[in-house]
Amino acid sequence: MAGEQVSARVDVWIWSVRLTRTRSVASDACRGGHVRVNGVRVKPAHLVKAGDEVRLRHEGRERVVIVSRIITKRVGPPVAAECYEDKSPPPPPREAIAPVAVRERGAGRPTKRERRSIEKLLGRRGRPEPGD
Image 1 (cartoon, rainbow, N blue to C red):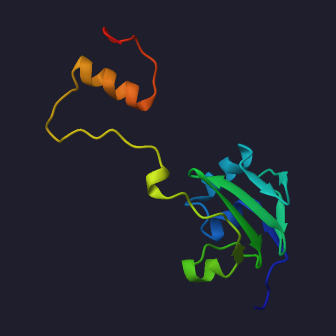
Image 2: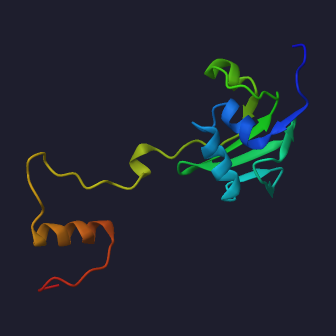
């Protein structure tokens, strides 16, 4: 491609290759210390180039990618996938994610006893129930 860039801001690149939904989320991840380039925490303005390893902790999982092409404009998913080599560990199975307490629709508010059993299930501390 003519006019291809040599380096780009890490937040712009992460957003362009669709690792985050918005650029502001990518910038916030950098500021929060959730982005590492070649093992070093970076600020949003840090420049990345081809061959760099980018680690991003986002939405409960870690993404590890090797930059293969620099882009600064957001592109479609097939083109974005060509811009990096994914070395991420596989995501955890859905069963491994914490269970969510579900109530039947229209069941109303939980009673005190139901609430205590929900809190016990979720591992929260509360006042012990009589008889425990």
